[in-house]
Length: 125
Image (cartoon, rainbow, N blue to C red):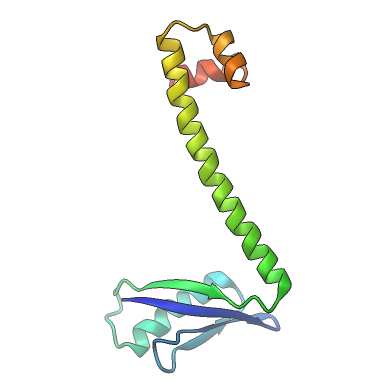
C-alpha cells in the first residue's frame, strides 16, 4: 500500500503525519532522519513485518515560503538533470551518426557547439 505523508516545519523540527494511519505521527530534526522515522511509524502502526516495503509520497506544507522556494528549486534542478541526461543521450547518438557518415570531428563539433576533443571522447566511448 502507498501512503501520503504530510510534512511541515515547526521551529527546528520536521513533523510528519500519515492521515491514512490513525496515530501515525513522527518528528525529526532532519528530513533524512524523518524519512526513516516515517517508515518505522507506518510499520509499527500498521503492524507490518519489520522488513516490509513501505511506499509513501511526501506532501510539504508550504506555509513557510522559504521551504516552498527550496522545494520548487529542488524540483527544477531534478527536471534540469533529467533534461541534461536526455540531451547527453541524444548527443551521443548524433555524434555516432555523424562520424559513421564521414563527418569530420571538427565539423561535428561546430554543428553541436562542442569542442573537437569532446566529440572524440563521445565517438570513442
